[in-house]
Amino acid sequence: MSELRWHPFLEEWVITATHRQDRTFLPPKDYCPLCPTKPGGFPTEIPGPNFDIVVFENKFPSLQAVPPQPSVAATPLSPVAPAQGVCEVVVYSPEHQGTLAGMPLARIRNVIAVWQDRYLELGGREEIKSILIFENKGEAVGVTLRHPHGQIYAFPFIPPKLEKELAASHRYYDAHQRCLFCDTLAEEQRDGRRIVLASGRFVAFVPFFARLPYEVYLAPKRHLASLAEFTAADRADLALVLKGLLLKYDALFGLTFPYIMVIHQAPTDGGSYPDYHLHFEFYPPLRTANKLKYLAGCESGAGNYINDTLAEEKAAELRQAEPQSVAAVLAAENKRGADGGAS
Amino acid sequence: MERETDQEYTKEVTFLPDGRRLIYYNFTPEVGPTAPDTAPPREREER
Image (cartoon, rainbow over all chains, first blue to last red; front, side, top):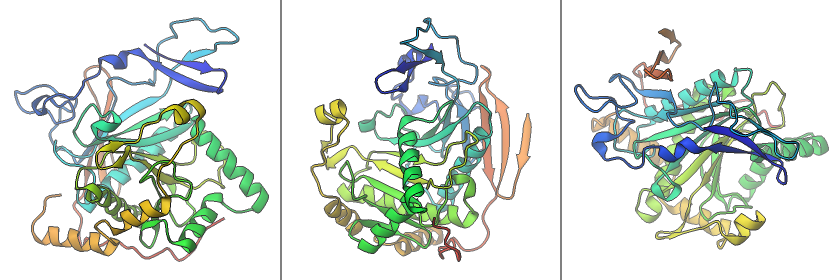
């Protein structure tokens, strides 16, 4: 059962999806539903063995193309609506082991091409207003399947966080005739203290206003509103910075670093968003190697984050972590190729 | 079953027994150096 229930005080939808309580939880490797089915073996979600990347509709979706009717009747104070939309799983590789950080650049480029394809295809549907591409990595952020994968939610509305960003971007554009994100990026580049890694086309930085230790934004230097505008060169360059950043995260404490990665981009509701700038946001739950940052009283109750760290200091730590440049990412990749590394 | 192609990959759309959509993406092997073009684009389109 899934439905949308309206929160009248925050003026946003809550997705109720009770069937998700029954979803597969950290199964042993031999019963991973995201591995291709082996001959005579446990039937997984993926019947075919030959693929680079596979995408399928989530078995336990929060949003569905043909949703059930709500379980309760709406009232003027309590609107309810069918949970229409699409929830997809993107399996990055047939291999059970591994992470996005450890994958060859070519595979990361391919994952980005698939994200682009999904944005275009799902965003082209009349009922879909916004696409959220994301990855939850690590049990610290609630991962239930360890096989490297991400997810896509295609919403029938614009989610509140994006809606707030769109409104702020629009107000700034009206006042200055410039993109808020482009100006922020220019200021970050001028200052330099919070930059983590950069290439010709993309830059990763701990934002001035970081709410979490090790929070990072990754964005194109050029004004691009969505993945739809990416060229092959953009995808290649993004793969380089994305891999470099994820390797830095892993090198920071010498462990496979948990994070939530999301892509914020222009809605697909038919509107025009010339003032919005695509970017990735990373929300790592760790504040030290073995301590979690909890969203406690102030964060959960007031909506105001308390960051116990300075963005400038955390950016310096990430900058020092290997690899220290995109040239180093490329050099390691070429060495891996020369050594016969798998792709 | 529907099959699409473009420059980089083939996309094979099929359905699981319970009716859910599944898409296999297969990419053409790359030719040439692994180094991507990291040069900044000529035009800056900041607004």
